[in-house]
Image (tube, rainbow, N blue to C red; front, side, top):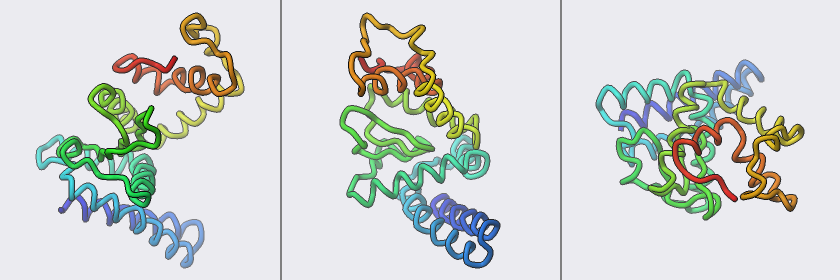
Length: 202
């Protein structure tokens, strides 16, 4: 329960602080409301599923997720709120003491997706892959999402990955495959995660 309350409070306070620096008193109010709207569902999920354990690992990762990696956690909190709005379910047994919020349903039945500490649609066959993304975010903190976005843009407009792509087993023969089979599995964060677990789409 304490983790959930503190998490929600951090989101509200940071939203308010960001708002006041960009928009004065009105910005403070708007930022606080945005922090409340994403922080409360995230805090509830953290408490309800007992995401962080009471041990040193749980405390340390909670602190990292709410300080150095807070931009990733906030993005994950927004992602979680959207899932909950459309009726997706919190996977409490999988989330418990995992230091991640797991959701039963994903965006697509074909893929699991992780943003910050929120993982949607993962099963045992791909969970380690998704956990790599959580670790990457914790290590790189506020740099993680910009670096991922930059790599996607770079590999979309300058497809240097074609030099090492497996053309025989994963041909790029239509427009959608350029992104699904080409850009996506070659960006740095996915390439590392696929080396640990999973098979890139073909």
